[in-house]
Image (cartoon, rainbow, N blue to C red):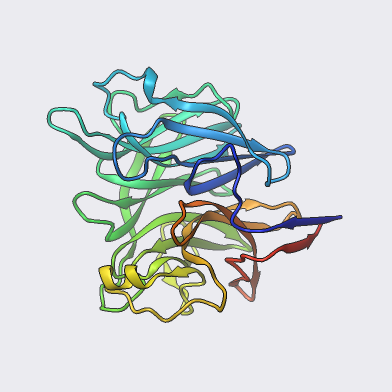
Length: 324
């Protein structure tokens, strides 16, 4: 059987989307991410989409509906980079939000919700106060021993200079021990991380922990680091970035050095990735792909590991044919 696809994936159900994450439950793929408007004004909340084939998507529901929230809650404006992770028999939703109209405005922070079904309803465990303040891009990773870690980006005060982590008791919604620094951005002129690093996502393969992350000094690109323990120390792959697309305008704005895209590449950005089980049972990378002059939308490509090194042929833009 063959699976054919062509990035980016434009679907009538999805106006635009950033920071995509796909979770497969039984034979259905579920997609969430940041909904427009991205930069100006509030967005509607946390949307969930579903698909049986990764190509044709339908809107399922709003996991958090801003229209039903009281204006006084801290999570009221600009829902950003939500993710859903299955652990301990339940579905855990991380989301990042702020309240721009509060007096004083509440800073961008991280919340946590839980449900027995991926489609909800979700109980917001951090209704009264966020799990962690002044953070963004939170993600969860549960290890084989049952311990869970939340990784996130410092924002507002640190300006996405750090990726950090914390062990968390999900059931108690309680952070354990002290936070730890995973990666600090490289500030040198021309470097792809110079503007900032964000979007951590952690997997474990053959005893090695892989942390994906993104930088935007040259457009939007993805690199990774490895460790032998969830708390690190984390070591960057020397061949970073392994994925993404560059944009001359971004280089001029943020100080990255433009080194070019592959011939024919239509993208100016491809990043903020997550990993999911693809139609062939392998690891696939999903993120937002952006063509110049068009909004960000869904895209995905397979990855694989050779001798501990992550490989990919993406981001692709021609028809791909995968045997499943």
